[in-house]
Image (cartoon, rainbow, N blue to C red; front, side, top):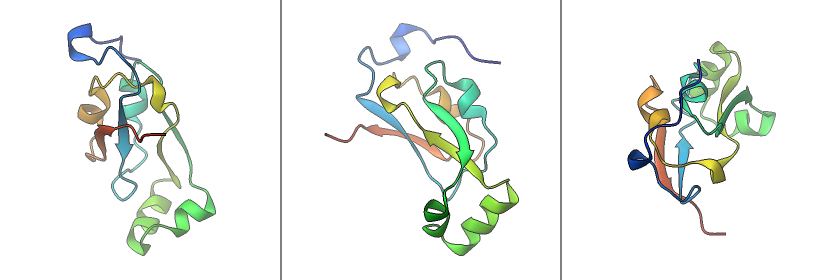
Length: 102
C-alpha cells in the first residue's frame, strides 16, 4: 500500500536538491522503498548485463538469487528528502545525498 505524503515539516520544500542513493551491493529487490515513497522516485527492474558485470562476484550471485532485479532511482528530481525510503529499506541500502550538479 502506497504511503501518503508525509507532513511538510519533514520534507524539503524544493524537490531534487537531495536524492536517494541505492547501494547495489546491499539491495535485495524486496521493494519497500517503492511502496514507501509517496513521490514515485523508485522502480524495481532487472539489471542490464553491464550493470551486473560491474558488480563483485558475490553481489552478482546475491542479485541472481533475488531474481536479478534491484531498486533504481528513476525520478530523482521528484525526491523531497522525506526519508521514508531510508527507513523502509530492510537492507539499509538507501541513503540520502546531495543531488549531483548538472
